[in-house]
Length: 211
Image 1 (tube, rainbow, N blue to C red):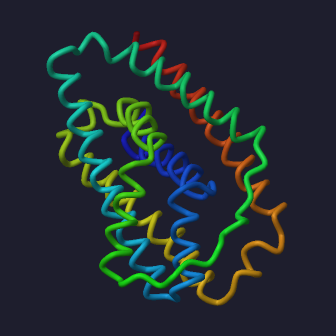
Image 2 (image 1 turned 90 degrees about the horizontal axis):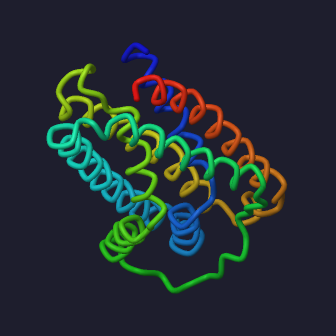
């Protein structure tokens, strides 16, 4: 697999995960609904900073394991792929909707930013996802880990900005635009699940061969 193909797979996988409604998305929508664009953008910015921390953590973990325990590379690929397939299967069978978001009082921009950061950092699924995904897409043959981390981190921030930022602006325009058609969000989640499983199977095959 070339580096360009590797990045395409990573981008598809990342996009599929980000568009699935979860803690981060609901936090952005809630603040956009109650505090307008400024609050929604502050929430998005906090979550993006959390994403940067996740990238740093994933890079350090992959670099450490590759340097000190290189024989674990194959097993990590297989285990991580199996975990991704399980997540994809769960999403494909799910019925996630954006609903039940209650109004809350308006917080200051700085406070919302901090809350967004904490929300992202305290999301256990995000940490597990990083541990499962980064060892599969960050490889020594693609160059220095820090360069790969910059690219993967930039892609993460870009997709978060597009998805969560877009939702922040949409939420500021009105709640009905987001929750009047729950079937749409259900099928987004399920499609993301199938996409996740497809990518994971491809990576599993490669990981098995390298092992």
